[in-house]
Image 1: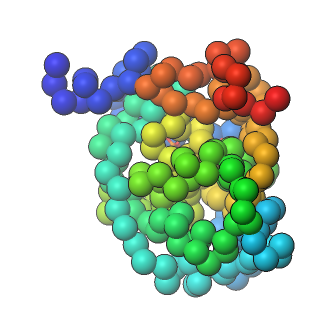
Image 2: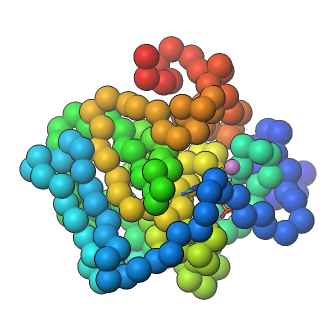
Image 3: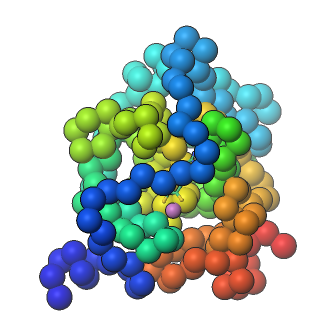
Length: 200
Ligand SMILES: Nc1nc2c(c(=O)[nH]1)N[C@H]1C(S)=C(S)[C@@H](COP(=O)(O)O)O[C@H]1N2
Ligand SMILES: [Mo]
């Protein structure tokens, strides 16, 4: 088995090219009015708001990771660059007891992840892919990548996060996809969920 095959989760294949997939239109980025908000169960009880220049100042780091779509293609060896979710947690601390994060995009797309997924070493707020700014159709100006979960949780055009003290389903999780979405366990559909893996 070569290296790429051993890195491929069950049921996945490497396609030719690099598909672009999303629901709905590609939004326009308007830097003057764009903001990023942190709301829900914050420590202060207030919503935190960041402008684009404020986020641009955060220290950058890179993550080399594979990307697995539930429709079974995997894109191997992406070099994502951006800032760590830990930066946001430090600037906008969650209340005690926050267990999950809802990641919100333009037009109301959303995905829920556990706080442990949000703070995992591979999770990143991405501004560049393979040494180039991410393209509009891949999430410009800001995307979250959670490479250890199926790619619908890697939200493009992210505009806010919501701290949750109780888990709640996001866009695809409400429409029959698995709440946790670990590709190594092939957690594709909600009917596979075991007790404790999803909100009641
Ligand atoms: N905002 C938003 N983010 C999204 C989606 C979407 O519809 N809207 N689709 C998801 C799905 S299902 C996949 S497979 C990946 C695709 O990322 P790509 O276009 O960079 O390949 O984006 C994810 N992020
Ligand atoms: Mo997907």
